[in-house]
Length: 194
Image (cartoon, rainbow, N blue to C red):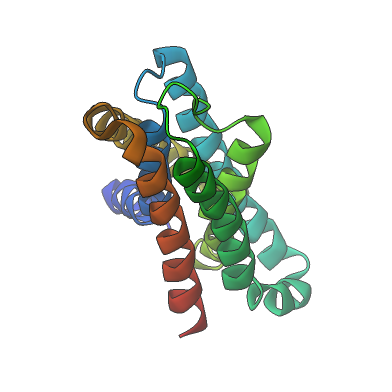
């Protein structure tokens, strides 16, 4: 692969495809915290972008070093995503059902939950390391930077949309956010297994 328009286009399209889970989870986070500040939104989108940068890069490294071990791990990716997203989504769902007063609910994910969301939404991006395996180190790095930038933009859009609807849905937003996370986990699982 050489540096040209197709390289950039492929990287952007990879970024869009990989960012769809981050978009949905960002939307759920926005639903959960309709008063989220810009700095918090940047932090959340930055975490998702960071994971979407790191995972394909790790996959690329695995292809060039320990490919046989990575292939054994690949069959567990859908299970890990399902478990992580179902756990966080179930927690949000439970808190939304128990909480009657919208002022009682906690705003957005805490740091640990955000890291789990980042891993769960980007773990399937490890396999992108195989699709960019023919790239040299610098091109793989550049592709991952483009993927991260696209993810950041798409995650911010999800947060903005979630915040807008979160204000309208008030106390039902946390329940909807939990359902969205569980659904994403199931979708990742089904597409990964079948």
